[in-house]
Image (cartoon, rainbow, N blue to C red; front, top):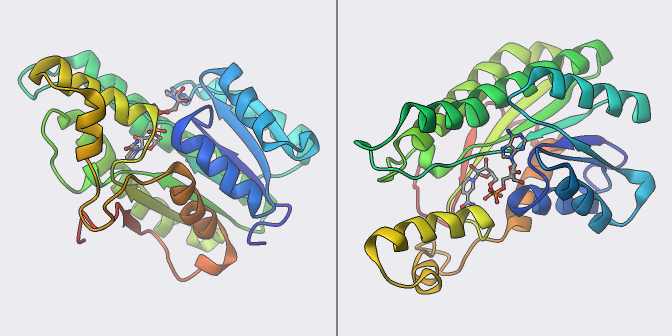
Length: 257
Ligand SMILES: NC(=O)c1ccc[n+]([C@@H]2O[C@H](COP(=O)([O-])OP(=O)(O)OC[C@H]3O[C@@H](n4cnc5c(N)ncnc54)[C@H](O)[C@@H]3O)[C@@H](O)[C@H]2O)c1
């Protein structure tokens, strides 16, 4: 097992990729803290993992530092430490560049970039106090490398995640904290369906047919949340020590860099 008894906190774990990450990390032996803006959804993820002694569910809003601090306090009072932190919570507001509102922009940067940074900062403070290192994995996106249409603010927020990942890896290496990101392409989650619904509302067609056509070019099928989860589990582990500050495309071959 790659993560035996490690305490791993996952944001946005109530559904989609976060739930797949929670399952994959639990399979590698970690004690899992499923957190989400939607506390009931976090509870569902924790319940689905089965072993109540090795899971915690906490309502956590990544845009509110007091919410993050309270969640960290709960983890520490239960398990005394944090070994891994996965910044998975994310938001997308599809809009053409000319129609993107200030509110759209702010929401995506608040959740995807600033929230991710503040979570990393507060988690790293705890890891530095523990003085035996840790690992942080950020869920960026291949959108942070490619400029997809109707997603200018989302693309930019994910490019910020790639930059934050490099900066934090360089700064926290001396504390034994490894920081990396994954850049998935279209993953079979509610977020992907919502994007397809937005396109169909404007361009017509059928959501399921559109989704069926949105396949990674080399893989030829949709990426499943648990597949990204297994990459995340590897990056949280000791075996990934040589990989530092990277934002790894995990999109079935769509982005060759
Ligand atoms: N689905 C994809 O195709 C895809 C591709 C690349 C990257 N991503 C990224 O992967 C991550 C997970 O995406 P998903 O597809 O599972 O999305 P999703 O919308 O299905 O799930 C996102 C989860 O984040 C939670 N969340 C939203 N705002 C939050 C906040 N302020 N605080 C805490 N939790 C919050 C939601 O409640 C939800 O449970 C996101 O960062 C997303 O940008 C998704």
